[in-house]
Image (cartoon, rainbow, N blue to C red; front, side, top):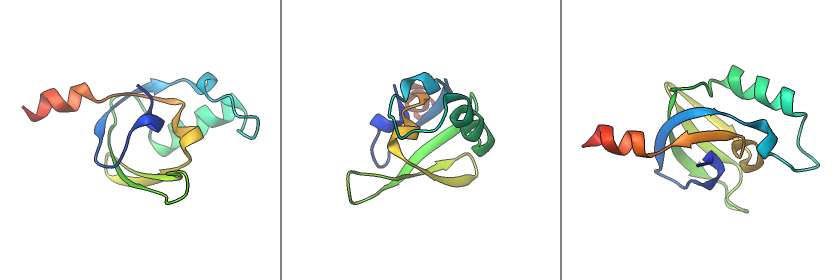
Length: 92
């Protein structure tokens, strides 16, 4: 599942980054996007929760990523692969 598909309150674990999923012409270079996301903390195993969505087009989104808060565009969030079932099983 992609981080861009989630809504407020959804939570899970980052599986990886696939910048090739972002096909928007206005998007930055795939290697640059991957570097930026990794620097922000979108690494394998990082826990997240979607905190907020923008009013227009639900963009940008605010995310709690481990111990920090990060905001990014949905088109950038499309590059982040996540697993929401891991958090559901941990809560039980």
